[in-house]
Amino acid sequence: MFNRPIEDDSSSDEGSQELEESIKVDPVHMEPPSHSSTTSYKKSLRLSSDQIAKLKLQDGPNDVVFSITTQYQGTCRCAGTIYLWDWNDKIVISDIDGTITKSDALGQILPQLGKDWTHQGIAKLYHSINENGYKFLYCSARAIGMADMTRGYLHWVNDKGTILPRGPLMLSPSSLFSAFHREVIEKKPEKFKIECLNDIRNLFAPSKQPFYAAFGNRPNDVYAYTQVGVPDCRIFTVNPKGELIQERTKGNKSSYHRLSELVEHVFPLLNKEQNSAFPCPEFSSFCYWRDPIPKVDLDDLA
Image (tube, rainbow, N blue to C red; front, top):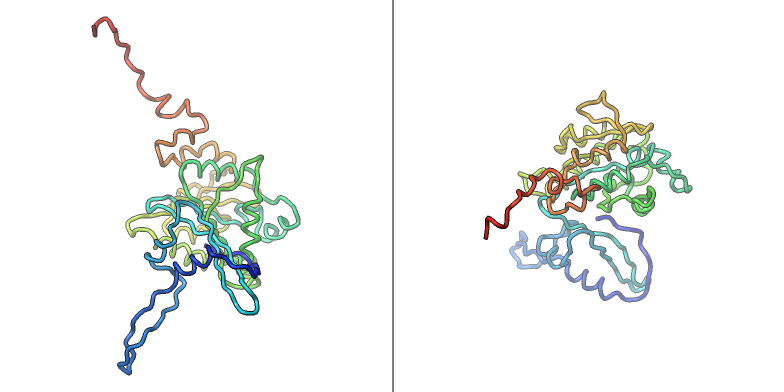
């Protein structure tokens, strides 16, 4: 979950007050060296399981608003999104600059000027993968200050009516210039990505590997994805020409359009009940490959 820009408002917000009360930090009793009994509070950026349960989250994205009221500035609000996923969900990781956009530096500038600098076919591919039951996680080394701009760009991408699936946006908690220098100049974004993805992987059971596949555009991305357990057969990198390369077979170049045609093989349907996710349901295993029903003579049954 990432916060969006703060918006000043002097009015009260009952929903925000309820959220604030529900996630209030519980007191932790600690015994100081002086042997006197006092109540201490522990600051934490992570909610406990009990505090999360009080939020009564629904499956998928949950829009939340944090608010703080001061005497002179009134009420300030900060909006964000909490995603609730199942313990056995499969996650597809996607980089942004150079992966969704055609290049790193221009991918951050040209979309702000109204120029479409997106790889052709990526929206259709991601949409098809999401239709088969996979969750998307967008991880970038951009600075946290660019969260609203980056989120707006992901919502803006549109390929003939097909948009990118919604998913958490993970950005580097550093300043704009340091993040830009690390991403574009040093070209070492893997430091943040490895720590971030490992933190997310630890939310799942130790015996489960939540990351199913990953998309990037640099060897640094491949290294980061490998470190968090993504198999190399499902790590894809794309170059500025739009050529898609699978890490296990680097000599075989494909594209987002071509992978969209093979999405049922590379990203098979997770839920067998979702046959409607097939682009051609008449050729599914239930309709096309099943054995024909034998003919029965009703007179013999009489």
